[in-house]
Length: 608
Image 1: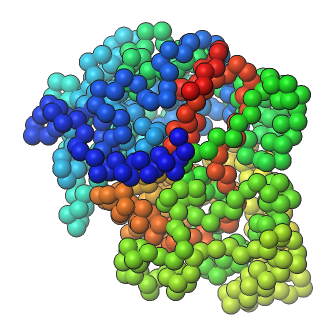
Image 2: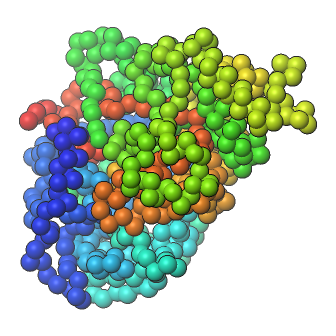
Image 3: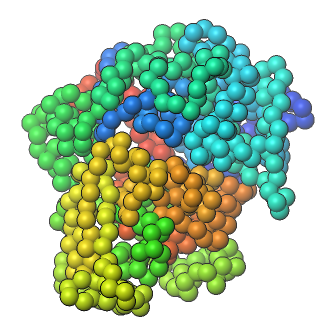
């Protein structure tokens, strides 16, 4: 099914009758096996398995995946250390995401959920079959321990979200969270789902251990896999749990079809790519159009041993580019930031380095219905007008666009550079002795921090554009551990990194862009944004009662962020380019959010 049709189906579904009519009542609230952020869940109550997924595929074989960098911990819930990939195969949340919908959760460790009409309270009832890998049952004491531990010792998002819980009560197999109201009396409508995504940890294992320290002790979980082998920094191997308690749940049937999953770590993207070519990795996601073309010409691709597919999806693509750290005085002026964005010759870089396959990112939600389009709608204007004094007038009258000639290059880029020069002069920067300097004679120079050597070509092309303005930029590529440490501590002038959003953005947007997160080490407010308009728009997302409201608010936030020029954006693609060594197979239908490897298998491939 095409992503646009899926989105239409979901929007129509908002008007469907209530889900789970006739479900049991508990404490005045209706117990249901699923909860949607907006409207009703897509899958009917009692569904057997996720449509498009075949529960009858074989369970066998080894899936080898590549990861760039190193790891030194098996503890993903704290800032310290670099956690290994794949640990979500071991540790489960209360409820599981539905990948055909913007934001819906279905029963997993919790078989039922009850939510107050105003979303001031949520109750989860645990599945009596849920078991840890050591055979002990998952209890409400485990859930309460997980909540309390993550609230006070977890990563910044945990502390932010769970800190809004006012009270917790348990009874038999149920646990109830009651949420504090905001100062204006409103409620955060997303919190019941945020709690539903909480990873549940075994209290009997963590009791007496220091939660704040990285560890290489394999975690005990309740998921379909357990850690089988660890080679610190090089590889981690997971083995399927033969008596996994949740194998027959609707959200799990047809999933976890590999007997073994191994993540191999590589120094950089180029080394990992060569490992795939040599058959040491089973599948490869490719973002470079040029390398995709070279891959297609390989003998293994020509003779069919490697299958190559470009699979469309409807999710927002990651927003990636050079992020400008406004904590540095150099980038505090929006005119300077706009000038730096204008110096990026997107047309030439796309043509010369990406074979013309890239789409220039001009939104914080590219490739989705959430991306701002044209001038603000009436609904967006109502949200934006109270901040007219803070926002640039152009935001209200012009679509956001980064100008560039069709082919790019020095001649086509000249108007953009002249505009950049004028902005810099207005901000007090002029070229003297071939260098851009301020009135104190200080030179405009900064460092661009990279964690992936594969992006050096794009960044070096950008550096040449900056040099035409008299700006001296230096590129520094570091290993993954150093990159993460500097990222967490905001220790950079600029950094090439990204944000990833869903089709139902909510509380995490405050972690990405909110003022409180700007001073919180380990948060994702990499530019250090402090804006009342951004705070208000981001906070309003989770309070949206309909999907139409959410779209208008996301588009308004998109405009405020884009016109703030906190990012020199790169490119995105609207499909997943995946190459696999046969006989790695996938379901014929691709979910709205794109490829989900959990439902793949090895053996005979079927097609609907």
